[in-house]
Image (cartoon, rainbow, N blue to C red):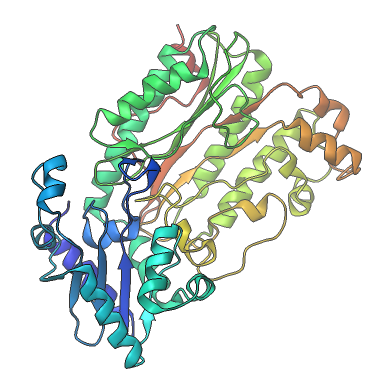
Length: 461
């Protein structure tokens, strides 16, 4: 945990940002795999972690904007629990660590919420993504599930986003721990990968690295020879020389901060000439984005820089044609790049995505509905303190190509005969994490992830 002063400042700032009423911030509950005592790994809600830092199930915080008080509600473990678990800290012990002076049992929370309802105080809560907390809020408020789904407080969402969007120096230390461990995972994979191994062999070894730090993986690992599938979590293939292997993985620190990096490497010792061409084009688009990063620029502009670089490069190779600007405007490039260039990162790999991309990633401005561009999670004007990913890629997706060709889509921009020659190519993505600074940007991590062909091949011996 950070110091109690850090959490107190965050709590008081939140109280000052919300005009009236009470704020309910439920932490997560345990989630059983198949019966109550057999649980999935517990992961605390990220907003609860941000304001309280306590990695314990069954807690709810109530912040009262009228009195300025903060109360942590939860029940201490019983002696019967301790028989199985060992000695545990009390709620009071943990409240002190995050600067909260008042604690009470869960039953008392119901009484306080009833009082708020009776006096017609506003009750603020965030969008919920776990059924336990939806049911908890329903029980406390008497609202229906639909009312909970539609009743999240926009005022509270904006207040939380206005804090969590800007990473402090102590948060950056944690994030870079996660990034450094993630780099170790990628380097290990580059050294380890050999023809005849399974994708799972790589996953098992690199996830050990994440867990050995006391943390865990920050999201399910993508490790695949089918890199054209954007989020491919199948790990059953045997890899062969000549194939490309795409790795997208991350480490989460013990405090919950994430790293998120991608690499593409040859299964053999070297890339083929054609693989080198597409790999270098992907790097060109990557560094076009990096060059564009600075305060005052919208991330939508950064994304467009990637799209133009990819379009111009594929045109030079004969796969696209026509005016690159017009092709990007129309969305023809999305055949090869049907996703976004990056997203915010922090306590979540897609930071605060549960609070809504329109507010988090677009500052309240509407998102595009165009295929490809609609998947851009971040479009807003960049500001110092933002932490984000840069990850443009090039993907050859046979099913999408066949559909568009049958629809005669973008015939003026796409040469389908040439594109068909890449049906079995796969996909390439390389990803780094950046901090927006007052001067421009800074690559995160105290270590270097291999990016160039030469750097990757040097580890493939």
